[in-house]
Length: 348
Image (tube, rainbow, N blue to C red; front, side, top):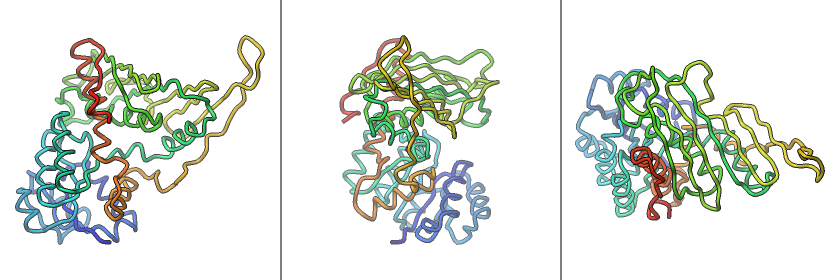
């Protein structure tokens, strides 16, 4: 099956999407970009020139572009504040939609988009590309194997000095809303459990070059009495973690450490004696499906595969809203300085 696609939002982030399509034969041969939409047509024309999309229509009016090109898909890479209207317009024009994260700028907007996609009978999914990496898939497989015993806790550290410039520098709750969702979603995926409540403390540290919320510490209560903690900052210089965070995964039999890159250490109890029980190293298994470890390319393949087979994609909006609910619960907890439950309707 082949697909005609319009890309909305022609800034720097869109290049990752187009590069994944261009470099993946299974995507390149099935997806044709027929239109580019941006409030700045010059940005769209530059993108078209860079990726050889000279035949694609360029239009700042999304409705006009969708009417003229009649695409099957819309790839949404607009800024979060514009996301609801762009996705709603695409769904109303009969498009399946794959959005950049966060899936909406508010939970109410997210709920509306989930309902609109259901009414339209169209697939709506979110690019949680960082769950489509080998490390995350390997950890999920190890947890599922039971080798660590019953899962009790996940702890993630994220410390990066990121100098983006642009909209992030003035964005409210910038770390929680724009980046932490990757780590929250990964924790939810690896644990196979959803979040029930959170307590979060958000700050903007001295020396931060962001206007608001460059750092946060959060404690999540997951189902089955599992704890997930997050310590993060986008204004931390001097000792950077991986973009995937540094992880400690604890079970009743042992612990896994992952640096967010290539280094794994996993040990389980191997005896009944001693103040500190003897330990044995265990291997972290490879991903069950290597095709699910290629970031954007894997998300795109999952998206079009779901459309072809009529199944729900792994990062469907109706599922991803559970990760977004973690973000907004953390923001509300930080605002009120209280434990914040996550609404049952956002974790069904």
